Structure formats: C-alpha cells, structure tokens
Length: 516
Image (tube, rainbow, N blue to C red; front, side, top):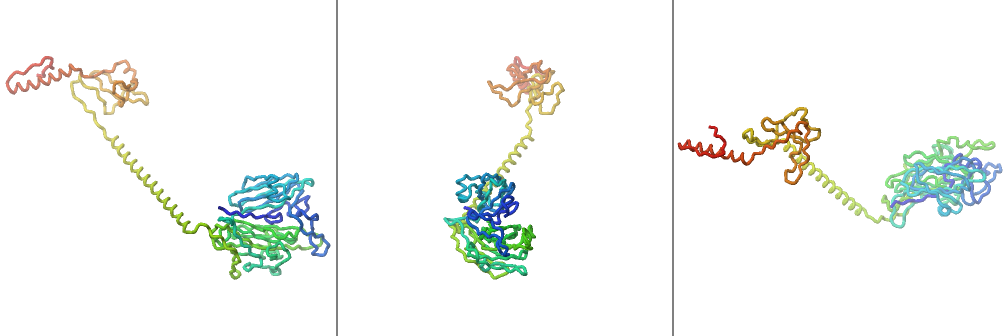
C-alpha cells in the first residue's frame, strides 16, 4: 500500500504564489493578515522612524477585495485541499492537468480546514505526479475573500503495519550542511523564534546567486524543507537534483516564523539526492531596491533555513533509516534517526514468488509456440494433399459399342460451345455426347446431386433457347438389345468352333446378322 504523507501549508508558505502581489493593500491585491490582529503592520522600526509594529496573533490568512486576483499552488503529489471563506465573493478553480475537483460542504470544510474556514475544494486519490491548482477570485469591499492555505499529500513509498511513515528531522545546526557565501555576507544563526524546530535557524542576507546552503541525503522517498518567514524574507530559489530551478517568494509584513518552503515525494530511496537553497531568484534581480519608501536606498532580502525532514514509508526497503549525509565540501555525517520497522515479507519470499512467476510464464509461452508449430504443419500437409488431388485427373471409361447403342458420357477435353449455348454466369453446366445426328444438349443440374429415389436433384433449367424445344435423349440399352448382343456373341463363338471341327454352326433366332 502506498504511504501518503499529508503536508499542511500555511497561507504564507512560499509554495503559494499570489497575483497581483503577495502582500499589499487588500483593496487592490492580497493582504497578509491574522485573525487576532487588527493592525496590518508596515515595517518594523529598524530604522528608528517610528513605524507601527504588530506581532502575529490568531490564525494567518490572506485576504483580498480586488476585482481580479488569484493564488496558485504547484506541487508533486497525490492530492490537495484548499481552504477559504468566500463571504459572497466569486471564485473558480482551474487545474493543470485537468482534475475532478470536489467542493466540500460547510461541515466538511470545517473538519478539513478548521473552524475559521467556511469553504474548501479538494481532489484525492490522484496518480503521483506534477499538478498546478489555480484559484481565480472576484471580490469587492463588501465581499472580502479570505484564503487560509491548504494541504498536499505526497507519495513516500510503501507502508507496512500501523506505522505508515518513518521520519528524520535534520536541524539547520546539524553538521553536514554545505554553505557558500558572498564576500561580505557570512551565514549566521538565530534563536529568536520558539516556533522553529529546535528554536534555531540559519540565515544570510546577501542577495546573490553565490549564497547557497545545501545538503545531500539518501534512504528517503519524500522531503519537507522548512524555513523561516520574517519581515526581510523575499525572493529565493530551490534546486533538487537536476530538476528545474524553482523560483520562490516569501514576502510578508509579519514575522510569520516556520513555513514549508518546499515538499515533494516520489523520490528513489536508494539514490543520493541533494537539495539546495539559493538566496537569489533570476525573475527578481532587483529584490533589494523594490517597494522602498521615504529616503531608503536599499532593503534586505534574506533567506532563513530551519530544518530538513526526510520521509519514507515503513514498507520501503532501501536501508535501515532515513539519513542525511553531507556533500562534497565536508566530512561525512549521518544524522540521528529512528530505525524503520522491518517489512513483513523477507527477501527470500519475494525471490521465491518471482521465480514461480518466471517459470509459469516460460511454460505458457512454450505451449503456445508448440501449438502454433503443430497448426502450421497440419495446414501445410492438408494444403499439399488438396493440391495433389486437384492435379490428378481420373479418365472416364468409355465402352466402344455400335454407334446406335453408345452411352452418354462426360467430356473431359476442353470444348467451346457456340455463343447461343454459353450458360448464364454462375450456373454449373456439362456437355453430353448426343446420339448419331443429334444436337448437343446442355445439362444445368449439378453432377454431384443425389441420384437416390425420392430426393430431388435440383432444377434443370436450360440456358440455351434451342435446347428447350428438343427433348433430352435417353440413350439407355433395353433388355431386347442386350439379348441380341449375347446371341450374336454366342453365334460367333459357335461358328468358330464349327470351322475347327468341320461341322455346321448352330443358329440362334433373333441374333444379330453374322458378319460373314
């Protein structure tokens, strides 16, 4: 059974994109908000200019009153949920590729998303693959649309027993992270947020494609990369193995703290993978000079890492534990992990089943091949016999009697009748030898029909107009004729005997005249 791990995404997760912008006035775009905070913060008072600072309280959400806006989620997985409250605003959901999306009832939405969300859409049981879900919103000041984030289900291999997934969380402070730095911006650590894993994070505010942090890992079918969203979080990129670069944006006016930066499943647990964060995005080269107010000349664009979670189904037999290993720039280090439960099937059982399947397949294929060969041999022999039978012609015996007593026979030699005697197309004809001085007749009944009394031999239609007026001559020898022949033969034999003995021959009344 496939193990599916559900990953909860807060609305400030950079896996969500927001258009026209990620955070701004609600009347024209999306606005980052909390259910327990009434003041939308500007910037913290880091420059001493007295700006209002408000801390998060309650549940985070994004709201909009804009006429046209949208939010999108691109992921690899087997299902998703989006949580929101329309408050009378209109929305449509589009997926790529096209999916059957279900709209939840009010009670279902609260069970799936929490009491703050009144609506939800979802799709479960998908094939593991890449999907993009986009929600288009049309709102106004009296019908504010509120978005509370959602959830995705990722494939982390097979499960066995009651424990579906084994996991291992590698903290940002663990050994084995490979770091590269810009000349004046080294990596630093922070312990200010208690919501972070192990209350620590590692960050860098040098916005450059040379500022990276990465880690190699193995024995995992899925990962969840956790980061920290705070007021200086903006554009960055994520790379996994040789997959396309994912350009992300975590802009927020709040210190939102821990968020899912990236999550995916369907990985090969036997391979060594590498995940890399880069504090730069090619689609936002001017991150440090955007949205500045007053006399400011620059803003910080920072990247903060919290932890990496490695996941694997308990039935995936790829190693003893999920492990994070280092890359090429430092000494190998396996992070602490929890051993997997042993699969219920051992390797010998699996091999035995495979061997049975191979033998059975071989036997079936052999039987099919023998059957085909036998059929081919039978077909060739039968065809050869039929061909030899057609080539062999048996002549009809002909009795040479006197012309007036000649029997009618089938003509074997080719013969071309006059045009008036050519039969209609499709009929079966044979030519009969007529009596002396007679006219040839055409027979249309089949020579293979029954000759038994009481059984019809088929219609005897005549194709020639002249033949229809002349009756069919019945050339049969009568009993009288046979008697005369026998007497003639006897007279001849007696005549020859008498000549030899010198006596006179006997005479037979009714015999044929002697040729003498």
